[in-house]
Image 1 (cartoon, helix red, strand yellow):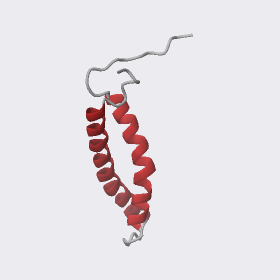
Image 2 (tube, helix red, strand yellow):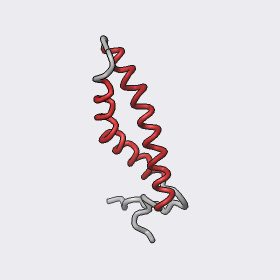
Image 3 (tube, rainbow, N blue to C red):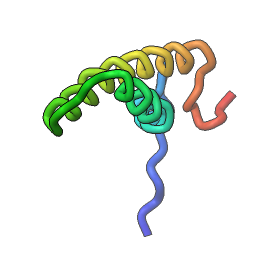
Length: 82
């Protein structure tokens, strides 16, 4: 059996940032997109998809910035290494 690879990044662990951004965006962003879509007229599936992509991209970017700043400030994602 192959051993699990480990890393010891200097500074921000960007793998942790990407994974956390993905999970938080799905958990928090999906309800936000759904709630915002109720106030907008979206007559076709294309309009719905375009709306979800436009709003989701903004949420994804904002989440990534917040997660990165959190990781930089707290050394998050370092695997508990003090």
